[in-house]
Image (cartoon, rainbow, N blue to C red):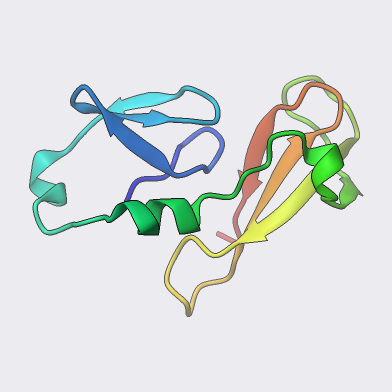
Length: 106
């Protein structure tokens, strides 16, 4: 499983590369690392967080600085993307420009 370096969403494979369905970021696939990995369709569907139309999804807002437009408010949600003994990752979506970014404890 790969996660987008830009917005943190789960990526899918398309034409021999990883493609983010949320922001469109792409990167090449590493065939050696993927040989032992098997992902089923039901796994993909259950792990995707749909944040389109965040306002109407009821996501909470917080005061934070958008690195894209400078707005000071964003929707946020938490998602466990690493092992269970690691802290969750905070994802933000700007209320003005809908730019997506994430914040880790590292």
